[in-house]
Image (cartoon, rainbow, N blue to C red; front, side):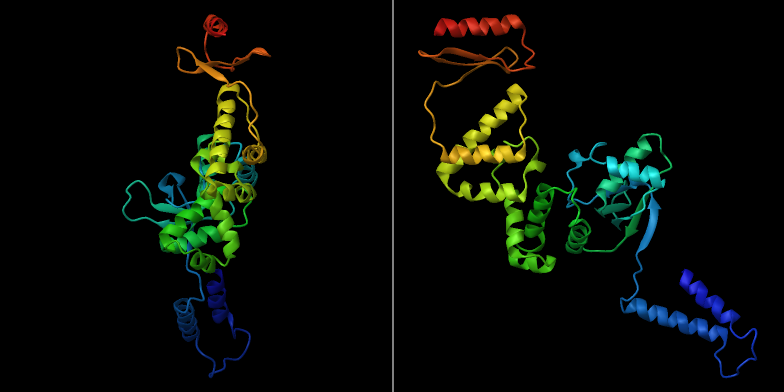
Length: 327
């Protein structure tokens, strides 16, 4: 618009200090010619007509295929954006949305910018009601929306391989008929990279359960684990190891990193199973495991009492007495 006003003003100012040239087009003719040229450029797709507006974040909702895990959006994970918005006193980079028609509670669907949307809402709920959500409104199909979201977020390091893998897996089925070659061609990425990324989303749920946070599962981890899942014996050993890791986390509060989980799962497939007494788990009245123990003739009893079980000391001692009586 500023450019159009400048052209309009120039047309009116031209020739004020010179003699009028009869051959020169009149201002009105120049304006109409300029307007015709602008419309022609828009029709040819050479001018972007998307609108950028400040809107109420409450009137926006994430697109069903957006690539963010909403439960991972917290004050800590969005701290950088919160501080940046407060410093600038506004959101500087607009999100990408499209207009909704049949939702009385929302006006826009967020294609890219869910993290910015969450941050603006958080600020409005924490003493900054003046913040609004800056959006660029586009008219795109679902497949175009996926590609727009992918291009906007592909280089972002705050999106995990897990989030991106599941976004790609959904898009592969919905937009590309499970054809990885077609999808790779549309996204301008290599087929090998797409395959490695999809392996993250294709890990068995029993293996995924070993990880304290799914965002710890990277392409590199999936590259090492996924081939082993095609071997029934190796898969069974990894599932058993995954169960043990999950039990340690639940009973003992032991949380280990993603790479260490992967090492333990892989190690379970290559190391011989060491003989030894089986561990017995004793559950309390509340249904939680309150005691684990092993017993052998050589080493006697080994007791483990998980933390935070909520069981009274008397109940735990009674369980130990019962174990000793059996031995």
